[in-house]
Image (tube, rainbow, N blue to C red):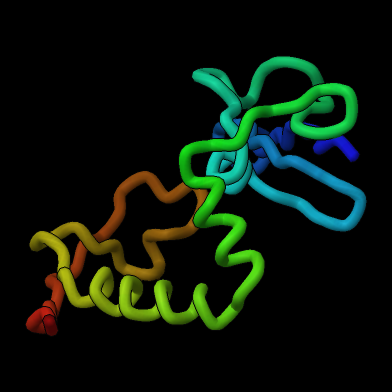
Length: 123
């Protein structure tokens, strides 16, 4: 069964862009998900509306073996994900790069920054 590509126009909501999602019978993936499993080429959001299944085959991506491994085992996914997520969270961030929560609203033109508190990374 082919994946169908749908464009979502969010420009009227003030986001200012159109996004793409890919739909199967009971599943939805974003382009970022699809390129982990399929080689969609240099322009993944172009081409026919139905790709990667049915009459149109997409070759597997270079990361497809990892997709298949994690699809087959939640235990493998958790074992890889949680240590990586913890490491990412403990890396910290540069001074002035965080926005105050009220500055994250759509349409806010002048964000407020806060000073970060950075935890020491663990090994």
